Amino acid sequence: MLIVGAGNLGRRIASHLEKHPELGRSVCGFLDDHTPVRPQVIGSTRDLARLARAEFVDEIILAAPQDREMALRVLRTARQLRLDVKVAPDLLGCEPSHRTEQIGGVPLISLHEEKLPVAGLWAKRALDVMGAGLGLITVTPLLAFFACLIRLDSPGPVFYIALRAGRKGRPFRCYKLRTMIHGADDQKEQLRTRNQRQGPFFKIADDPRITRIGRFLRRYSLDELPQLWNVLTGEMSLVGPRPHPMDDFSAYSIEHLPRLDVVPGMTGLWQVTARRDPSFQNGVDLDIEYIHGWSLGADLKILLKTVLVVLKGSGE
Image (cartoon, rainbow, N blue to C red):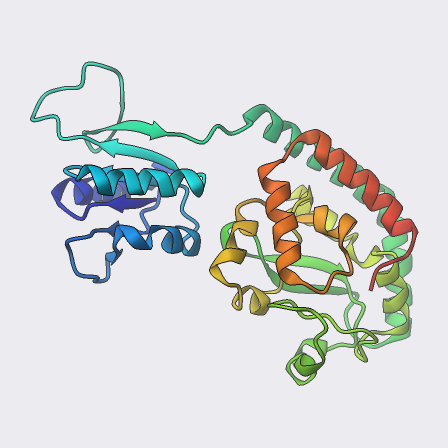
């Protein structure tokens, strides 16, 4: 949450939320057009778009008193960013006549609320759990076979476990079958000049770090199978924007951050429509298109297309 207005009302709301973490709300800071920037006041209302993306904000609270022009500007920007907006009005000491949400005794009136497809999201999670559970049972013998090949092909662990940027940029441990030589990450910076992707994403053809069995696994995306465990635990979904390494995430621009508004996926719209497109921005645009137009039917279509893409062996 961002609170617009660093006066007594705004601070009262923030204080109550800090004392009650069970409410599930975290205040990123205050925006105030009349107070200098300091540790808690992180900017003015004109910084809303930038800060909302940088802090992965879901909700704005307008803490009265506010001038009309500023309030309309905040509301307009929040709607564009698909954020919920609530206002804490100055009721002159009176109780509100209609039922409202209250935080610390302060009534909040909703001005704009994003409608989430709750039933659809529950169905998506059910599909993830069933799909990942059945998938793990089915591919476990295959994983054991590949584990033997990986150990025979090169020294090192069978699994490659690395931090990836999850929803709202939170890091999580992502699992893959190891397709590169042990210690390949230490050579990444030396190869950075050969990067064939545009933007904060690293990929080169004929990567010298890839092992023989690794090339086969990558060609058919078999190295991604252990991520079914990430799906089962809720860190990933079967379909969603692909999670990127933390060093790539650290190079994101503000306009790239919306792709992290949802749980990352094993496959996505980018992977089935523009897998070899070198433009990172084009990929981000596809991820955002997927997020804004999401439906369970779209997920099923992407999963079907993924099977066809994988069978063609077009992985790198």
